[in-house]
Length: 235
Image (cartoon, rainbow, N blue to C red; front, side):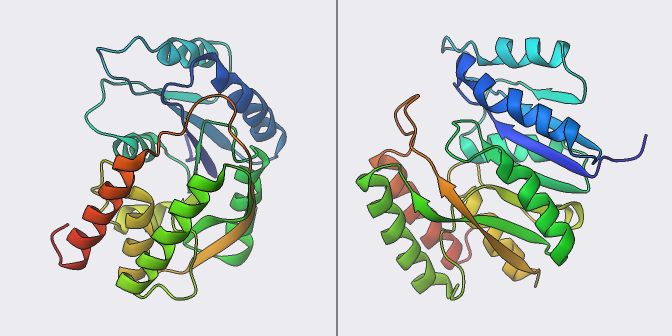
């Protein structure tokens, strides 16, 4: 079978039945798009936690065509989940999105078509409006200023913005190793190392009323540690 044009990769960690608010409309949009596509649902889990998400996405896959489920005991954080989803995807272009409804599902096809039209190798969301609270905006602004100062990424902003889009050629050329939140930054840095064309797509980041943010103060220290390690060539 030929590869699909698009793989939509959804990170479903600990979403439970709330993930249906993302995957139901997204699956319908993919089917109605006129493009060949697949929906990759990443529901990795910690064995010692009571997480219903794997069962929810497996039941969805059984009743819908074109759905791939990745559900394994976790060996890392968000970065490990994203890498396992990209590894399972087979599309010519892969668009990754979080399963918390903060990005509208329509962003997936919008980014896919924009990448096709522009020939961009890697594309990321640029949050021009965000409703996720003062704490998250403060952390994000400080992180982006520091990231630009350390890596000289003038012209790019909102490094962690989603969706994240990659062509298959770009993905296969990258050396993605991050198991944690630094994966978003690693994608951008790898694209620059390879001389790939990086684009930004304006997006609106909605408020998340479903669960507390997973980006806790410890994640800030994690970001700093990873930036320093990357800067001195240790990762």
